[in-house]
Length: 242
Image (tube, rainbow, N blue to C red; front, side, top):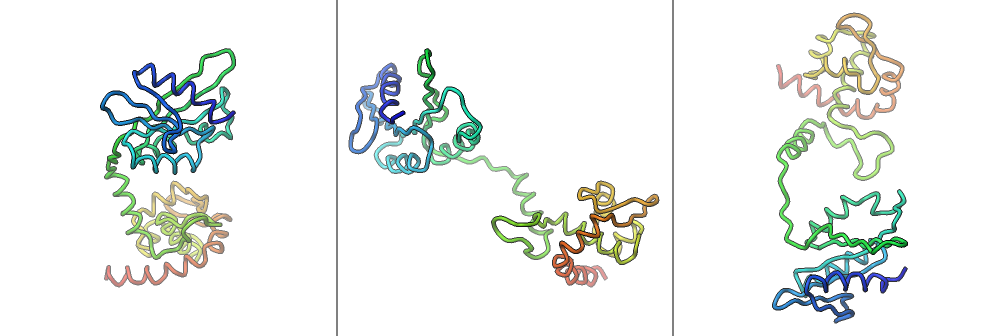
């Protein structure tokens, strides 16, 4: 397929809406004009990619109504970007103020043109709950135990830090009561952490009494550096409490 294959169906679609349509005007793949309205510019590609985005952004200094149009196959494979990232692509275009059109070619069927997003200014909706959770995690997490980007081991969250505090105390005692663990580690949600046992680190030996599982013992080695970094913070918490 060539980019020129997309032009006839796009032109026909716009003409049915009363536009006069011409191609290759000042570097723009498609330009449509209707009366005194803003000109509509459409950039064409055989698939969604960065050059298509760059062209769309560049054309916004000529018109507010810029669309990106690209072809999608009649039968989408899981490897196709539109199959995998459809909602993300639409969201990205919305944030950039770009319109989005797909052109689907199928044998023995008319070309299917779908407008997924019209151009327009993006006004993000604030999510106060997500913001609150973000700041809560930031405040609860001790230090900066992760590397930005890809980590070879699991992300060290505040929850994991609390679980490591509990595991470290139980390891030192052999087994311990929930109340003792909470008092010594200053982890408010000790009972919930032990009962849920998200990581498989704890074993309930009696009511309210826990010991470490083999996974828990292994975690103390895997996260030994994190446990060391938590020790000064725990001492500071105890001094503040006293």
